[in-house]
Structures are given as structure tokens and as C-alpha cells.
Image 1 (cartoon, rainbow, N blue to C red):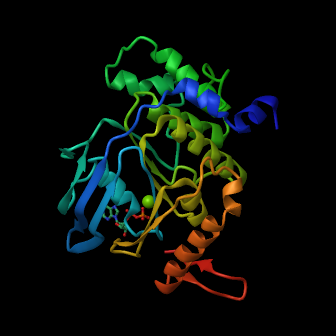
Image 2: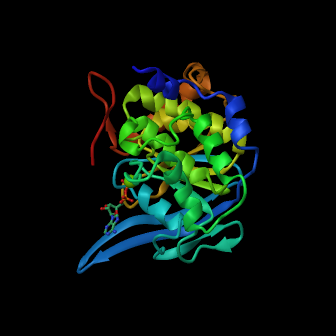
Image 3: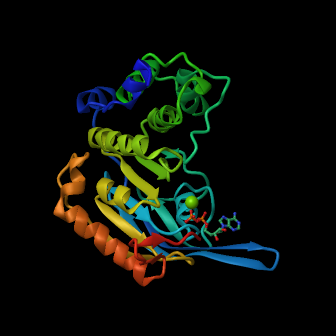
Length: 291
Ligand code: ADP
Ligand code: MG
């Protein structure tokens, strides 16, 4: 690994994150009986069924569920990118009706513009919002430094590893200081070690800014290590099967896996998936059934 890659891989210190992003707080998200049915010709897909969930201001909520259970659909409803078939989403007291812009979104792929530098990829968000606040460039550089990318501002996306590119996508989602951050399997395309590090760094960033986070993942461990509450979804049509509260001390970092509450929560969520046929036990232990 090069020195630069090592640097990007290293733990982001809380101080750096705090310097880049002073506590800002988040906004409440209320999902009020949201259902979604997709219709294509005579084909109907009932993706989501009566989801009722309030995410408190500054709360970190993770959603875990099998493939195809409507996690991404739920996120698109929250972002106003899709209208619900029934029910509604309310953010900060305002009903979402069309794309909601006061949020940041991170997807599984970083989706960076190859012809723009890292700094200009980050600033694209503010250009699109016609924001010209003084200090934006400094804020972008501060956030890049906080995720281990100091010195990469003038590089191009192809010069960065997958994990580094995903860090840029996270900074791009935060640059306009949104009170809400939506993340749809943001670490799903990364190797296991990079994924672990990104999870640790995300917790540090969140502790420094306390945004309202809706984090979607396939990984039970990741959900339990990151969230204040884990929402467990059933197979399609996606419904909330259970909500698990996590009161483990933070930062959970690497130590979190040793916490008896972590072990108990992972076990209880695994049991839900076993009972719902999402997992099957075998001689080698539970196995995820791909959908
Ligand atoms: P997840 O993110 O949990 O894997 P999705 O929300 O992507 O699940 O999809 C839930 C279900 O809705 C799937 O059966 C998927 O095929 C279907 N679906 C998602 N988007 C559309 C769409 N635009 N048109 C038709 N069906 C869709
Ligand atoms: Mg999805």
C-alpha cells in the first residue's frame, strides 16, 4: 500500500472531524403509513406495505432486510424521488412532495464525474444549489481531510481507490450542511477491511455533526454497530418486522463487537431472519438466502 493509500485508510481522528464539521444537528423524519406498489402494464409489485417510522432529529437509524424488500424504495420515498402509493413522508414538519433537496444521499457506487477533480466533484453539490457562501472551499477541504483525503483535492476520480472514491461521495453529500443524510448500502461495493474502516469513520463523522441518518444495509453487524435503532424489515412486501434499540456506548469502533449488547442484538435479528426464512441454518451456521 502506498503512503497516500495508507493515509486514506487510517482512522479519522475525532478532532479532525470536529474541526471540519461543528455540531449542526438534524431534522425529524416521519414516515406515516407509507406503501408503494409499482405498476408496469399488468404487472404489479407490492414493494412496501404501511411503513410507520419516526426518526428523531439527530438519530442514527439503520434498516436491515433481505434483497428486494423495498429498502431502496423507502429511501426514494423519503428523498421525494418517488411518490408513495399511500401514506406520506414528513421532514421537519413539511410533507415531502417532489424531490427534497435539503438532504445528502450516498449510494452504493460513488458516481463521480471523471472529468472533474475531487474538490470540484464535492463542490458540484453547492454549484447545483447556487450556493456561494464564503468558506465553501475551505469546508470542502476540511471535510476531505477529515476522511483522510488531504492532498487529493486536485486529483481525478480514476486516481483514487474505490474506498477513497466513496469517501468523496460522503463529503459531497455533506458539503451543503444538510440536516438529513440518506445512505443506501454505501459500503456494499467495498472490500471487508475498507468497509470496516469506513464504518468506524462514519460513526466519528456522525458524532461530530449529529445529523439525522437513515442508513440502509444488508449487514446485520454493520447496522448494530452504527445505529441507535435497527429497523428489521420482512421480505417483500417490505414491512417493519421489529425495531431493536441499541444503547451501546460510543464511539463503538472496533471494540463494539465485544459488547454483550452487540452479540445479543445480532443474535435476535438473526433469529428474526431465520424465522422468516431469509436465513437457513446449516452445518456451517446460518446462511443468507439470496433473493
Ligand atoms: P431493496 O433495496 O430492498 O433490495 P428495492 O426497493 O430496490 O429493494 O425493490 C423492492 C421491489 O420493488 C423489488 O421487487 C423491485 O424489483 C421492485 N422495484 C423497485 N423499483 C421498481 C420500479 N421502478 N419499477 C418496478 N418495480 C420496482
Ligand atoms: Mg436496494
